[in-house]
Image (cartoon, rainbow, N blue to C red):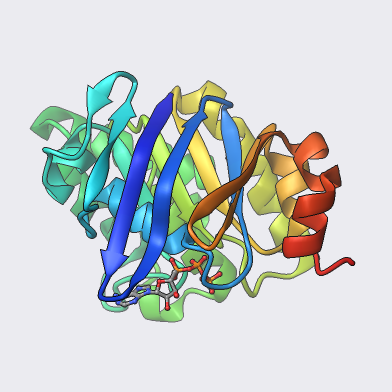
Length: 234
Ligand SMILES: Nc1ncnc2c1ncn2[C@@H]1O[C@H](COP(=O)(O)OP(=O)(O)OP(=O)(O)O)[C@@H](O)[C@H]1O
């Protein structure tokens, strides 16, 4: 469970996160909002790249803000980025193994790498170089990296961007299977409302860094304020 308490971030004159309080506990939660609403900034605060000026964050009761980004990774926090970070001159397997070297015990590294590769379905291209992977395979490498070691909270920033409908559906099925298979909670940012509807039991909507709505995804997406602010309806 992730608890966010009166969290504020300031960049010069703007407050991309403004007194945000929210608790997310569904196996897969959505994070949506218009461009510039503060979604990526919130992920950056959770993963330790941005320091808030006030507030607290707890993951399963443990305070995250005192921890460095690497300590958070070791505490089970995982993250994929809008622009995927696959290393071109490493194989698919070695892209995952590099993370295992940092977060898994020596005797566990090979097992956790193979398990993550198999889970995302990259076993057959395990030895192909990153540079030769297609976009879907690269996105699966990113997802696989999130499954190395003992993940507790996985943050996915637009994981399906640029994928075909069929690839998006395969990715959705994988994400939905993560909580049971790995015991981790997942938070997904995406602009594709139908993908959010299909994946996320609960959704948090941000607008100008504030909480516009939080609750069951169906209820939130039907909320007139959300439809006005986010879906562009009058
Ligand atoms: N490093 C930074 N320095 C200054 N301002 C920033 C920085 N990063 C983000 N911002 C500003 O903070 C606000 C929130 O940006 P953020 O990227 O978190 O929004 P977002 O909801 O993820 O948007 P999008 O859907 O377009 O990715 C925006 O006004 C943005 O211009």
